[in-house]
Length: 259
Image (tube, rainbow, N blue to C red):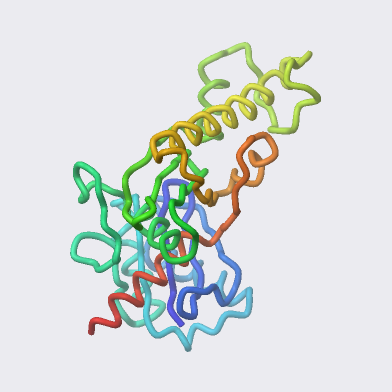
């Protein structure tokens, strides 16, 4: 088994993989810049043990990160847990993915991992919709090549910014509005965020389709907000919460095979 860890802006997501399949459910911790490597090692160990995971059978590990200050911290934490330095997704790592963007070195490690998983596991072309801190839509074309995508503010960021900058608007809990033309302030906020975000995603997906020559594309969603927005979007997609970790498993295996 291997330990796969992704460091995001909001959460650290991790799990144990056999090949590229999750052994236990995916786990999550808050991404905190002030936490130490020992602290993270203890929290990851405790989380895995709580779901019955056997750390003694971990043979290796892989790490992807979009938070540079935490990359070294998590490398040390994983070493404390496994006794081995993790493979870190970045320059020089074999992924099997052709990246056709202006500066291939600028692509985030988590996007690479998701694109690798989509290429291996879903019909192409494939659009990956990742809804976390940011809402990201990326595309792997019919030839299995990463051709780019779009990045938008995430649902939670939009909600927080609106309430912060408009002093008369109340803090609110996201819920399904009774109707899109809402008759209360809170329902108006919920309607605007949910239908506005859904409309933006639908619009981008329509334009992706046009640019791909109107070829039907598989749409795979991941990220915490995907399930909330799905009923409000007109496009249908497959939800794969563990897509990123599966991609890390594939990348790990490709690099281990070369040793």
